[in-house]
Length: 141
Image (cartoon, rainbow, N blue to C red; front, side, top):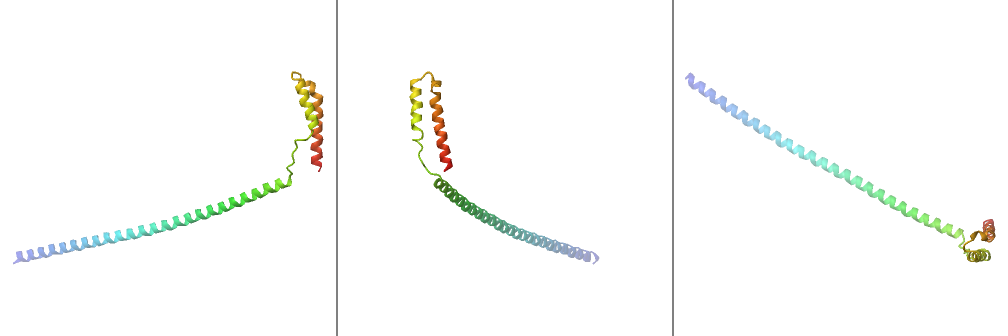
């Protein structure tokens, strides 16, 4: 009888151990599944946050690009207006006929004295004097 009781007790203990092991493995499996789901949730949240941040900076970049394009257009327009204003301020006179008589004398002298250009010093001096006088008259206006 004692042996039978011992055997029964042993069988009960084995059953309890098996049941305990089964519960532990179920608990461990449940824990792993929950950890995996939590990990996925955190990953999805982080990816969504990354997307929001990327979208924010993409919009910032687009706004800055648009702003600088407008500034460049405005600067270009102001530059063109300033150039036109300056061109209107200064007359576009032709100065081809300035001191033409003295210029002709210098050219004639150089042709006649091809090998001796220093002989034309007086003609060059008169031409330079005429040009200086013309400049002074123009600036005085």
